[in-house]
Image 1 (cartoon, rainbow, N blue to C red):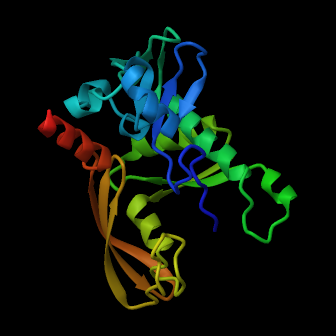
Image 2 (image 1 turned 90 degrees about the vertical axis):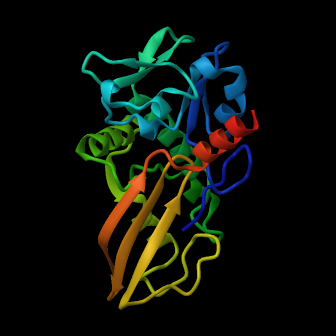
Length: 238
């Protein structure tokens, strides 16, 4: 597997932020949207997965801050109001823009160092999307819809702590693609996986045996990620 770097920072991850440039109406995704957020908060949409499949009246105050205004859709769902475009944007559409951005980056990176330059132009039509452990049916459906909006023909959803276990080679007997991935845990091992992301923290107890992973239990907090820690530190300093 090949990690797809962020085009702005060169790092292995891309911030889950999307924005609309008020002058050109062009999309800004990832680090570009995050850096411009202080000057363009009304047209910035942070961490769309927090609104996917959610009802407006079930949102907490933490879901409503940090970017564009959140409004109630006709079906009771939550949408962002975008002043630059003069319309409400559903989270599935915004998440689709983010996924499409990642797909475009994936097609620009060769699958391996030995691949020919022509292999980098192959279109991506199927993908595995990781989701928080606490996602319910409506949120899973909305995530799949975001993948379809990005142009994917096939979407498979995997809980984030399970994906983290696979990335580190747990249960596979081989080193993972994640930085620091070791020799892997082969079988007869019960492992607690803690996955801390930019917007959520998920934990899972997995049983690794015979090259397979079985999730014994999982839980998570949708408002305990790096972004929340940053906001808490900034509020404390202020």
